[in-house]
Image (tube, helix red, strand yellow):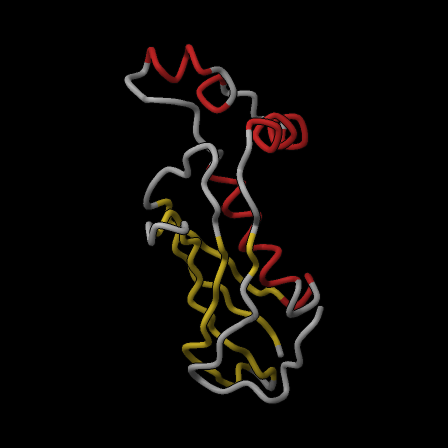
Amino acid sequence: MTSSTTDITVGSKLPPVAAGTVTRTTLALFAGASGDHNPIHIDTDVARSAGLDDVFAHGMLSMAYLGRLLTNWVAPEAIRSYHVRFAAITPVLAEPTATGTIVAIEDVNGERRATVDLAVTLADGTVTLTGTAVVAL
């Protein structure tokens, strides 16, 4: 955790997480770590047979980048909910960045909570993942 939760207000932005370039090695390592060995993510021939130019990243990899964004800010046990919607594929060699903006702060049963709008955006501006999280502050 790198940022304070005491000074946040609606409109505050979380420090972004630049994930770096998604390489074939990234995809292979994520497949091994997650157990998701769907060949469309790691086998160019399979991706091409499906009408794609190349392999693309697992959607859950982008979700993991958003998880890192949250846990860089609050402890994992402070996350009350976390939901995402997959919007576009992340092609191999893309450079995703995870971002979050506080959209609400409220008291729920004596616990101060923030609602965070989340997104993963590629360098060309494509938004590949959107979501919302609620965290205890």
